[in-house]
Image (cartoon, rainbow, N blue to C red; front, side, top):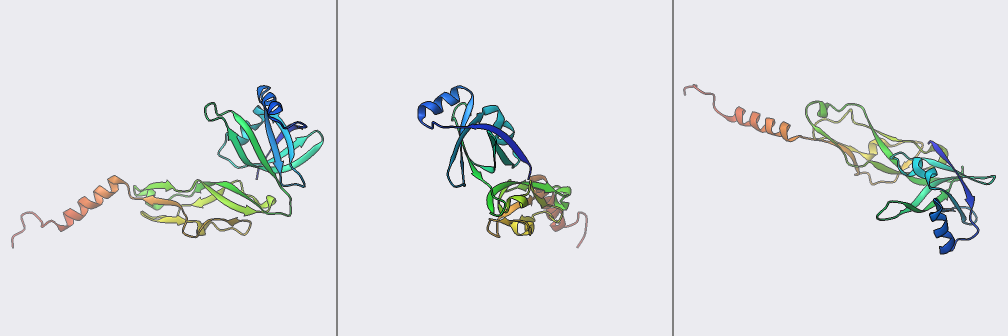
Length: 202
């Protein structure tokens, strides 16, 4: 999985006054969990743009004055009106410990059902996986090439030896639905087949 580096500074004071001063200065207060003890730090708000405002999943390298930590974003708080980032929690990664995170789904292949007029619906845009940090994928590929009209792609078709998918087996990832136009055409064809031929004498 791709990684983003964020450079910050450790915080000695974590009270409300100090936190407000950081935000006023354009910095975001953060906490790194998962190690022996929480690490409080701050970084420039602009440093988080490529991490927060993207549909992709990333791991993070947090650099704090000579110290480096591998982590993932665990939780983020934003202002309800301005969408300004108020606080971010990170969770530290270790090479020998599995981690759980959500990874985006990427559609690949061409569905025969779509070629016939069906509508592809992506039911699940992100899937929760559990893996060692080195095995975390950038995307989970959902191959829709076997999907005929009305077919569904279940999460069981996306299994991998590198990670576990933490979803029930009946989770639908994508499906090809019959479009209104295709449904109407089928209904008209059925009516035409049932109707007696014109001009035919008994």
